[in-house]
Length: 96
Image 1 (cartoon, helix red, strand yellow):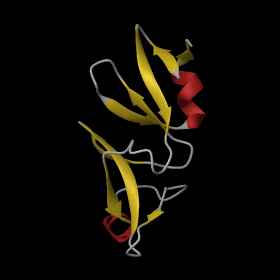
Image 2 (cartoon, rainbow, N blue to C red):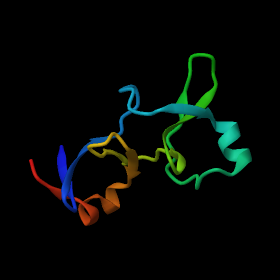
Image 3 (tube, rainbow, N blue to C red):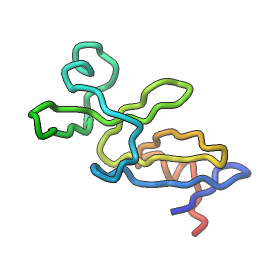
Image 4 (tube, one colour):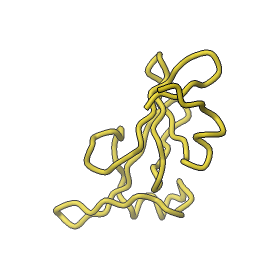
């Protein structure tokens, strides 16, 4: 999907587990004990070894852990950020 933000287009992809869209994962226990993120709707992936991990996108602001319904926004310069589905239509206009 393509959306417009101000004067340039960005690429928008709804996050889905298994598509390789995230930049990495952190152990669920680290996310919980280090207090990095609001836990509501946080995506948890159970690995074959039983470990539970949380996917994230990393940018100049640090790690943004992905929640259910999130979209990954990629600017023309490759900068990636996360946008919740509740704000997508407020911040962006669909162009395709």
